[in-house]
Image (tube, rainbow, N blue to C red; front, side, top):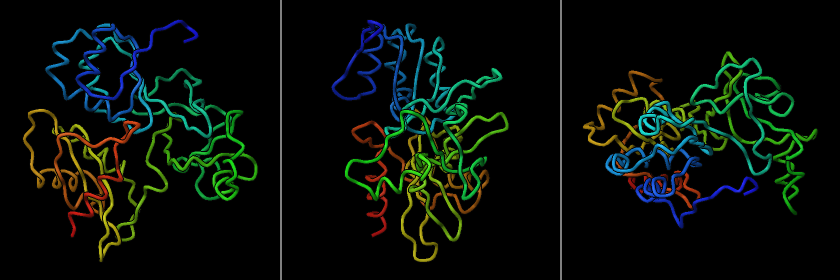
Length: 286
């Protein structure tokens, strides 16, 4: 608004209406979450019928982004710069920035941590390559209103905010989202982050989008099950997907069942509704 830009608002997200609005208003900058863009790239007819040449920036956040999704977006929006951002209500959006050495940010990375305000913590190791992201900057909240126990749980004694987000760091220092601390579950003694299994599934050429949730198991404690949206026109079976995950990832991670959906359900903030899918998965057990 300060730059006197026009903002196009929609009452709710619908992929075809979203595409039509881009063409009608000559939109240059798209903000979204990955689930929204995954639904957009499935609408091949609407995309082909709409002039999308105005788009210069596609900014995503709030969820992991797969390499396949980035490639699909590039196919339809070749003039656009695509980036995946990160931020929290409690710590603000300024956590990551450009690489100090000018190294280009990998497509599925969320960026390079700004010195002094972001760190990865694994137990007593405050500079881990794999661990929970802690943030400390002027935007970090002093606490939750009238919730001292919640504040003590989220904040360290020296003022670092525990995000609950698990990240890994590559050789160039870029961070990648692994999963939520509270999303992790144990299957037969092995820790599983749903997003890691989802990334594996989405590398299959027929899979556009995946969501993995845990369901109780008498022997393993919990086991992963998957909900999958395939690419338009793709022909694939549950057994083929299972075989692929067993061949390309740890055996304990492979989904014990796979349900194919036309779309994944979304919450009011357009994130995948994991609670709904978990309830559906647990209902299928009864």
